[in-house]
Length: 218
Image 1 (cartoon, rainbow, N blue to C red):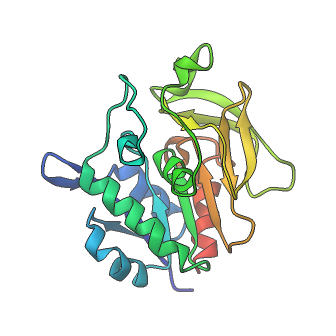
Image 2 (image 1 turned 90 degrees about the vertical axis):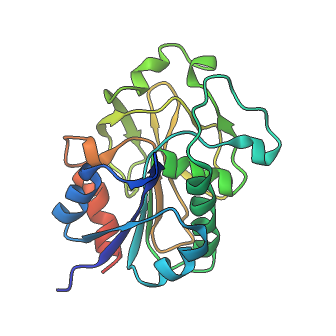
Image 3 (image 1 turned 45 degrees about the horizontal axis):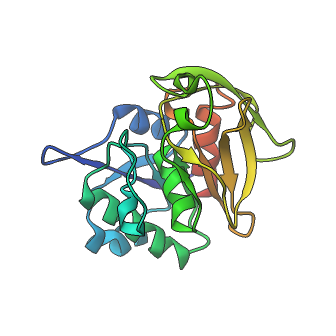
């Protein structure tokens, strides 16, 4: 069977389009061929036409000032070119409901914000012990029974999260109530996870998440 091409959005740092090799390794292990998508908003439509599925990867914070919201003092925003490219990609995906999409960490947050979700800009403002979600810390998530996601341990590295998820079904949370998984049930495969499956050792919450995206893209 032909291995599907999976486009992965890249960051833009110090003049380089950059992506951690763990994303590439996991797509390969899941049966796909990873293709890096540089942060070019003007080419997003053409890129999307050439891949079978998309992974929106993790990264720095969303600059919410473009939505008229004051920026938190702890925010470390992604490069403006990447933010423009990611939202351009989401706009293109609105017209391609059959294109499988997996949003990881920042990717899930952008999926939500694109649809009007409220962003928690700094978790420490709303929950105690927010550090358990940073620095690849391991914690538990509880997935809805019968959903695409599984309960188990995950690795996280984020200080922002979605406070709500309009138009999505919330299918996983951590034990402190943070939204960890979302899905658009009206689409073929449009899933977001707040953790990093590409760095999570447990197969059910790691490789299997990416494998589902790859299988949907076949």
